[in-house]
Length: 592
Image 1: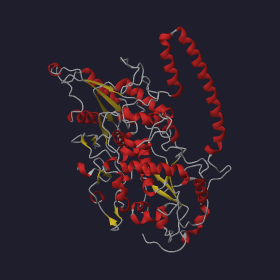
Image 2 (image 1 turned 90 degrees about the vertical axis):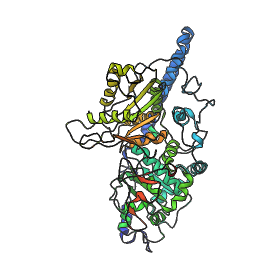
Image 3 (image 1 turned 180 degrees about the horizontal axis):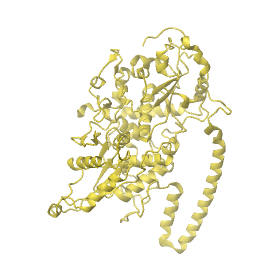
Image 4 (image 1 turned 180 degrees about the vertical axis):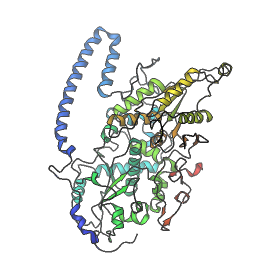
């Protein structure tokens, strides 16, 4: 991109008067003006809850003297109920010998921290000690629920994560560096260069699967460019994910001076519009640039993925990013990032696997629901088959999520054809041919209950050919996706982590929900291809090339040649996706 000398605002200097600054009065965000009162009320309410819990505990201790056999059960219920709540209806939990012990070690109480743990609680060095385990139990307990051998992170990735943690703490909210940088946002003056503390602020707005992909993508970009990652505090992030960085917060402070929710593809502050309007000049930079990387982005927005444009963006102190995609594959095509990415990820198809498990730790309510459900229904199965069902039908006589008989047929054809589930005996002779005690648990996740019910009925009415017992479980069925619904999002996240605890995965093509589950698990899934005209595809599914998610809206512009090109053929480790022919995904060269 050609750079011209002069002021960065050029002929459109009038834009200086339209910086979207927050008002301290009635013009401010309503949620902010209410926050102090809400906090005080919450503190009073929490104090009342604390007194109530203490009184209950005292009463329980007295009762224990009289009813000692029931004492442990009372204390367990008080402890679990005081900090966690169930998102799923588990009904009457099945009882097994040894239910008072953890399934993977000898800890008597799964909710209590302990140093005597025989699994890699630090995920190969991705995590560090020092966090309060009770405040975020998933951080150090996730590894015990993985049924697969995880990939090993590179020593260089671990080193870079430690450096990033130090940067986040040095420059994060509340520090002098952050305060100075925030004031700089209000300036109408151009900047001559960046400081030691530069920032990438991610605007959160997508569904749960996309949300996890966009956070991971933004973090990798921050890692590559030496920026502090901050995320939108008003999109339920604090209620779904624990803080990932020690000694600091990744939530943008409530007094952040920009009204960032007003930014869109038409904003004059967007990089694409700045390039198109020719307002970028020389070696001076605006205080911030808005990066519009949503699925509706235009040609000039996509220049973000070009080498020359990255050189300019490196000089901007604040980047405000809005995206709903996993844009990591295109970062692998930017020459200045390639050497660093190769050192970070020698196994190139492990980007989300490592960074997702490093960053994204469900809060205690979500984790308690997922692990309680797992221990009740899935833990003792010889094999857990996760089936993630997402319907993309937009027209027809049925509701959007079903029931669709052709989708049920596709699920069974894939699972039985790939020998992930046993065949059902058609006759008594066939069913009696096998006789074993093997149990397979099917974890079905879908907005509709119909598919799980149908699979359950079919395996319940007939024995399998080899005698295997198949039991089908579905934690929830919300019937339709509920936007901006906190409990709905929490259920979705719990189900993603439940899927990641499977032995094998069947996922629906084009679904980010499945991408995230396979990445966290480190499982290469069988992908069900999207049917057309209500006809089961042939074959109904295929094995994925890697565990990486697909970048659905990848650009097709060759920055060097300055023309459209097939970017799935530039380097051997970036290919077109199996389920989205125009998308891009990372594969491991050694596994091609």
